[in-house]
Amino acid sequence: MRTTPYWLADEPEPLGLRNGRIRPDVVVIGGGVTGCACALALAERGLRVRLLEAAEVASGASGRNGGFALRGGAMPYDRARRQLGHEAARELWALTERALDRIEELAGDAFRRTGSLRLAAGADEAETLAAEQDALREDGFAVECAELPPRLAARFSVALLHPHDGAIHPVRWVRKLAARAVAAGADVAEGVRVRASDVDALDAEAIVVATEGATRAVLPELHASVWPLRGQMLATEPLPERVFARPHYAREGYDYWQQLPDRRLVVGGRRDVSFETEETDVDATTGLIQSQLESLVRDLVGTPARITHRWSGVWGETRDRLPLVGRLPTRDRVWVAAGYSGHGNVLGFACGELVARAIAGERPPELALLDPARLQLELRQA
Image (tube, rainbow, N blue to C red; front, side):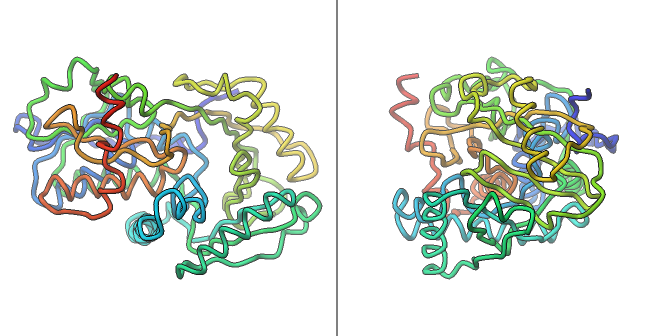
């Protein structure tokens, strides 16, 4: 069975170096959504930028996820208000809504503005959804109760619609982003791995590390601050009928799925079956999780479906479930943008742009919330 993600089945267009002999102002490490967004924003502001990717653009976490484009962060909005403060939470959610609008503008046919459904499987989860709905409405964010699809009515009690969310072909989107960066003047060098010992030797005024689940391998001082977690997914053959119109997520995100325009079902999750094995930076599938995902497919469609693709992706997790975005307190030239805790498709794009703006001399207010200096004690102890 193939372990290449469904999204990576297409052959990539070559990008290549155009100004390889010119000293860049900024080196960006990592060719995922964050690195490509950062490179594009820097190039648009007139800076010389070179992006270094260990394999191919979008071959890491940005091309190995479920294709969800969701606003917000890793925690429900009402919990974010308690944890971050009312204004900071509203600022973060507004940032991601603006990012979704920007993605729709740039992504073309790689993005569909479908909305997403969050589902409650029992009374406790229904109460959680009601609290989030109330908090979102109080702060002016669009959200509404939705009718459960008939096939799901026996398993779930409540469906909450986030109408501005979307579905994305993550590889096609990130490659479009990289191509835009190249057209704006950036260099993209694929097949160039940067190790921890290489970072300080890079010749540039600023260095951006945008390597998500591999962050601590590049910046060892972040070993205790950003750690890798693995998510596993699969895709079925096209189903006989269109059942799900938008991305769905349930059981606090431990089950998630969407049906693509060709009626293929993409399913992921079940990491809670084996937390201990899924805290890893190894991109590999396991029989245990994959069998659980097959069971989820049967529950969703009523019959077994032929599986055509199986894959996994590794993201970066932080203790407070907020990304680290900004200049690294331990190194003057080094900036980091990582730790999206499973919500990187939109938040990662937004944070790549934030870092670029800061390097270019702007002062994005959102960076205060995400500043790596909040973990300075951990950094000193590492």
